[in-house]
Length: 588
Image (tube, rainbow, N blue to C red; front, side):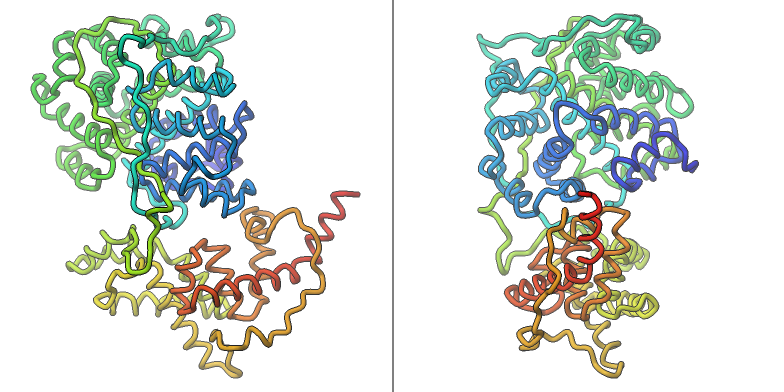
């Protein structure tokens, strides 16, 4: 791909890397452009919410859905922004009692409610946020972030994108309780947020909407306070909905109706039924698509596409390669399937925006949609932390089962997923890139040969790292003199008295996340004794938990914590001459 591709540049400036979910879409660049442009308008720029506040909302949405891969990514972004790990752990386990100001806790609660059950949001929810002195533009921003989360989640799950960070184990889910919206006598119709008038000269997107729909729908008019978002939404509709390179416009309009109906969003069902009518599809057919697409008289191709989209929208956790296989067996190209994924994600985005702002319908609803059962938001809770003897969630379980059933190719998935961590572990032990690469091959060979011995009492990644540790130790034993990783009493005899401790702007593990210092920190780690550098590699660079690191190195937790602290102090002394000097230069 062209490195100057504008969305790619914007994405790298924000994340520092190009996420896997975007790499998976490079065969249809117009979809990638639409998605990143929409993301940039909501997340990248300065706004009433800080970057940390936005990432906290996204972290809680991912946690509430039990998506450990997405939750880990947002957790890491917050660490990059300087958020202490202990505070993030408190946020995830119990956000209501994590020390955040009451207004921010209320904003998190609203976001979780909108994300888990959009139809239940009403004017009372917005009024409650106003009582906590949240301005309309900030509430709008929270709505857009929630909507963006669902767009990105649909696309990520629909494409089966590999996680950018090894997913952290998550605790057993508990129910997050939300008050239901006032749908009784006191219910108030929208819009919930006031917006300035759309002026054609200030909103070039108006012409796009008029070309698409013949008018400007209320859901976009109500967002007039965020012109850059409206422009990005118009561009997304033009690139995703209108382009007919792969799926037809009619097929995508049908996806919009079917998925909106499944989400309980009558606004978009009514709007796009009218749009389909203008394209020659009778309103009665659209009604049947909304109620039961299999009885709408559609051809097999259209039914297959809607089956796929509804599977992704209704139950993302049950969605998988089998859904792709069904479309491929029906003659669909990958480009068409990717477009169906993007269209489903865009529909989830639009539905969530409408739920959150309460845009008034442009057309009267022709049918009554069935009530959508509330989803339970799955949040981490201290009452359900993993304890000794419990089995942690393991994202590798499916691949392991496939290998054990004879699918040896599935082991390649495990190699790809964990090669970086295994290499880092071995590099931490051996200090030699060449020896680490050789030992990594031995590690995976041993894991494959002895997979029947893996009992699942720990995560596969922890078991794999322990094999890597033993493999690295064997290489050390063949060296003269022997470097030991044994704990024993040696730590007490180190005589560690750091001599150059000065104030830094960041801790070493935070500095590692910054590209300009990453190499320097790695070099500093490699200068430490083996038993300290492997702990820092696993804890601060590979982000294993204290318990996982201790299990992988066959250490007790107190011993591991002691070694981790000593390693950090040693690393601080190694790097102090550089960072202390840098800090001094910045103040002069």
